[in-house]
Image (cartoon, rainbow, N blue to C red):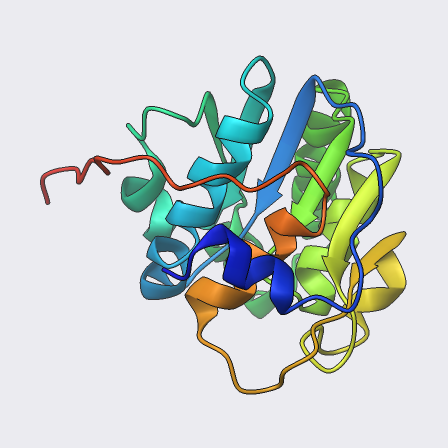
Length: 191
């Protein structure tokens, strides 16, 4: 992962004073490799918000990569397979109920801050649906499919060709919470 100073240099600007947050939601749904590349940034986020409750929303396939990390308080699972199965079978009402149940679960947690590392329309919509007053995401071109429309604070990166590690670190640095190094070790659940 790049150093925190490098992450700050990748930003056109920071958000300003760090937003106050007692309850933080991280969204990086899948794939497993991309979730793993987000772990160092979330570790740095924990260092910046040591007293906050940090929850991570993932899809089932990535749950084991996040579960057990010492700086994550709660893992929430987006029911992707269940929704896809219901939609394939034409069970639209059941799919709508499942999606509504997921949104209610997010809203019930009363998040103050959401970071959308995934940057697609699905993750952006989930960030918005959480009801969090501060929704941080990427500006274009890193936010795809209109995901930037759901963020009310957008990190604009100055370089287009950067690693996922650097891009993720820059999203945390955008908060203006100071330079933080990622913590180790990362825990890996047995398969």
